[in-house]
Amino acid sequence: MSESARNHAVLSRRRLLSAILGSACFASSRVMGQTPLTGAPNPSVPPTRLIVSGNEASESGAFARLIAPSLSSGLGMQSDLDLAFDLGHDGVTAANLFDRNPPEDNREMALVSKGSAVIASLCDDARVHFDYSRWISVLAAQQTVMTIARAELHRSFRARVSGFLHDKPSRVAVAQPIGVELATVLGLSVLGLHPLPVSGIVSQKKALAALANNEVDAIQLTLTHKDDFSILHQLPEGIAPLFYVGADMVGVPRFEETFRQAFSRAPGSTLYAGWRALSAAAATPILIALPMLTSPVSVARWRYAIGSVMDNEQVKSWLAAHALHPSTGVAASGVMASFTPELPALLALRRWLNINLPRWRLGQETKRSF
Image (cartoon, rainbow, N blue to C red; front, side, top):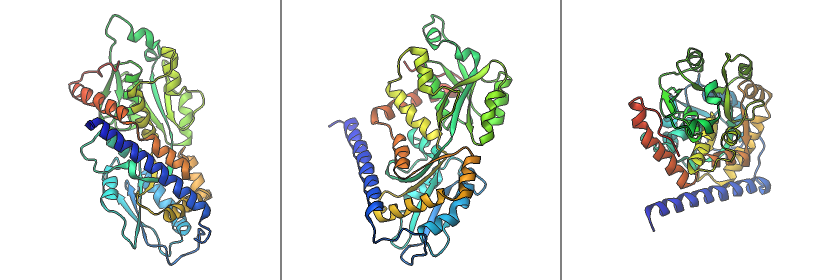
């Protein structure tokens, strides 16, 4: 058997095992009548450490602090959660720590992660020493991620990519080459354009200014507040949304609709499949996961506790204010599964990166993907 075939078999087994484990945990939560799932303190519940991707001021850090009291109560703990904050900017350090330290017999562990850590793993970042496909997701909260571009990018893509002249690069504002903005860079590449990442634009305010000043042609905005949706009515003339991913948004086409308008067919390439996994991660700033070997009883208890947290009015208000749409239980497992493409798609994504990262360092645009 070739190495590619072996890797594909391993990945398929992992996906199957995760699905079986998720189903078993869900079934356990339905039938374990003798195991108390109330929020009453239970001496048998071990202390729990919650590793948080980000400092206390970050979005994930603020969320962890907000839910800690009700989560401790829902888990039936006799003491408070042990919150361990990480200063890393993209969650890779916290994820490494989570995978490197398996839970002890007398202590449980969980992780508040973010999609940027998953993106680093998908892109084969050398810092990554974790395997997110082994995690059990109990909560995934998604936001709307929108790509906004100049009018010339809204012209017929078919006309642009079929022209005899080389199409000019489409400058894209990014904080760094590998990050959440890769959803826009790769998306434009799948659409047949020649995106050129412009690094160092570290905030959405600076990205909007760069777009208005004609320093870039496209930017990616994550709608992190309920009032951010009003931006659609404040864009300068000649600038409009191109597509979005993540939580539903009215009045803006999804990526698949934009592709269909351009090519009169649905996207179906392996690189598109890789983009789907990457863009799903880019739209997921908060993810709570348990280690793969967590017992079904413990997973059921965590899912019950997360459900009680989501019923908390203060938590509901915070999620709504931050334009976050939470998925729990089996739905959260579905979000996690969307981060894991089949092996051909993963290899296509990494091949695309290996070809284009050196070009970007030289200031050259992305090589056409088809």
